[in-house]
Image (cartoon, rainbow, N blue to C red):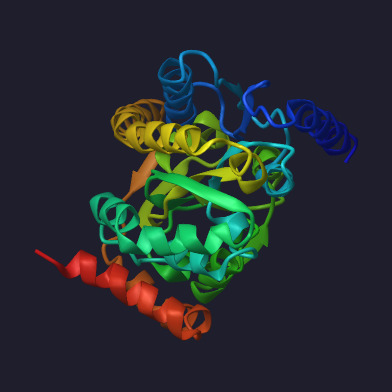
Length: 328
């Protein structure tokens, strides 16, 4: 709390000093991932482009590795203007804008290509329009890979294998409902606490993508990685509307353009990191299992979808995404 208060005070002071000339201080960009993570590197490229395209008038100062706190904390600061730019998972946005729930639904996307097409199209625009109402500007969507379960005791080859297991999930009602529907005991927990919880037996497993499984070193405690690929949700690069609205229209266009162009950079970096992480983890002795019937997991998601798609607009958003996946 003390760190958040100090950061908010410092950022507010910086904003006040800017007055009518935004750009007098750099844009503060937060990320929980380490400095060499693909999305952090993509934001680094974006930062360089912003400086280049503005001839040095605008700058971006990055704070990766959770330096400014967990995502739920930095997201709050972004909304109130203490942080300017934030790369966030959609889970902490669920409580702010219900539209962000839809892309996190389990077994919604058929592939990462399907996800990218949907979020670059009308479904992605609808999600960002919802965020605008909550003082957040959506700049672009980044990859978060396919999430799979990793466990300490045994692989997860069928839903029944999760019974009796405490599985760490994000602080998201969707993820809690998903694990509960599969028979596991969903245990919400901040990302920074998971490693110790796995080592101490507080939880029996978690779920995430290959790069996060590697960079967090969770594989040291949970050596069974099961390729359920249950969620292929994007992450979002967002900006505080408070800072955005202080920018001149041409600077808004410059930032939006640099962010859009950073997506292709991110995709290349992500693919390289994902492939490399999988190869390194297999070589390190991680036990990788392929469930013989992934549809067995998907069939149990009907009540989860029904619960979170009660509102008509959310249901239509999911239908639009599914239609894009069905297109040849």
